[in-house]
Amino acid sequence: MKNSRVKSKWIIGLSGSMLSGKSTALKYFAACGADTISCDEIAQKLRTCPAVRKKIYAAVGTAQTYQLAALVFNNRPKHKKIEQILHPLILKEVRAQIKKSKARLVVVEAPLLFEAGWDQWTDLNIVVLADPKTLPARLKARKFTQAEYDRRMKFQLPEAQKVKRADGVFFHATKAQLKKSVERFCKVLEVLPHQ
Image 1 (tube, rainbow, N blue to C red):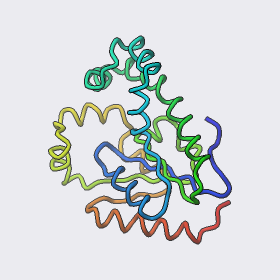
Image 2 (image 1 turned 90 degrees about the vertical axis):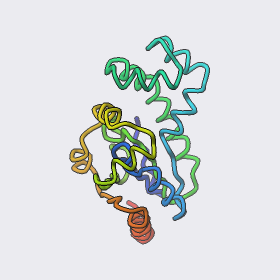
Image 3 (image 1 turned 135 degrees about the vertical axis):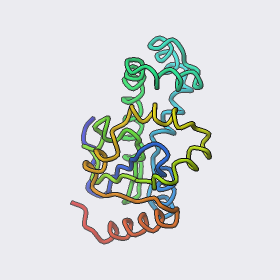
C-alpha cells in the first residue's frame, strides 16, 4: 500500500490484542473530534458484498459468518486466503475514507495493524493494553471461552512485540483511565506541528 500520510492530517494506527479495548478507545477519539475508521466494521460490510462472498466461498468453501470464524481460526492456510481477499479491499476503503476526511486527526483501528505491515503508512501507532486480571470478565461479557480466546490469539503477534513496535501504549485498567489517555494524547497532537 502506498504511504497514506497527509501533510494536513495526523494518521494514527490503533491496535491491541483481542478484547483489549480498541473499540472503546476509538469512541473516545471520536469524542475528541477525530475521524475514526474501524477495519473490523469495513470487513463486516465487505463480507456481505455478493462479489466478495463469492471469492471467499471459492477460497475456503463457505461464506457464512458463523462458519468462517470457526474455520479460519483453526486453519492457518485458509485464514491466510481470507486475508488475501479482504486486506486489499479494506485498505482501499481506509485510504478512501482518509482522503475524504476533513479532520486534522484520523484514527484507524486495525487489530492486525502490525501483522499486516499497515503500521508503515501511519504517522504514529498506539497499542491498547488491558489489565490481564480483567480478562475473565471481558471473556464472559463477549461470550468467549478461554480456549477460543487462546486459539484466536495464536493468529496475532504477542502483546510484547506489538508494544515494541508501537509509538505509544494506552493502559486500559479502567475505562476512565483509557479515556484520560486518549484525551491527553489528542491535546498533545493539537499543539504538535505535523511534518
